[in-house]
Amino acid sequence: MEKDTVYSMRLSRGVREALNRAAKKECRTVASLLNKVISDYLRKEGYLLKLEFGEERRRFPRSKINLPVTTFLEREPESEGSPGVVLDVSMSGVLVAYARGSQIRFASNGGLPRFRVCFHFQKAEKELSFDCVARHLRDIGSEIQVGAGFDHPSKSDLQKLNSFLM
Image 1 (cartoon, rainbow, N blue to C red):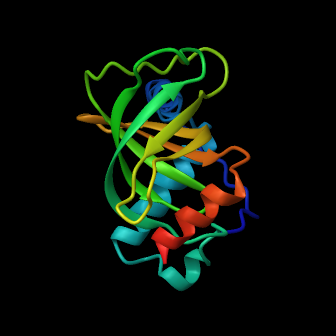
Image 2: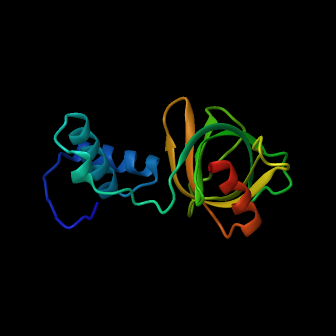
């Protein structure tokens, strides 16, 4: 959805501080968080129809799956990796969930992390690996979800992934 309107509003200091904390935790700007909260509410209450919300912005459709994954952080390439679950995958990225209390640690200083995901589809004869750049992190209580884009994937790995997604 194109964002072409500015809306200003007054907030109490406490609400503003809470918004800043929530936005930081979600790795979003305050404006992005407010847009999401308002859009979610309007959709839930039936005021915002899908037609009004606009077309899907992703170049590739996502497939919902539950697939075990091993993650290797860029700063810890020699580690044994951390287990997670791919919740959805497309030709351009993944959404991975890690259980609360798992060994994986994403540092909040600087930018979002780079990492490698390795998973095995039943149709694929060998494990697929993709270097990723995290786009967002969400703490949803019982788990941490990381949305990431593939970073320069090989054509052969994309072809294997495509055959699974078909």
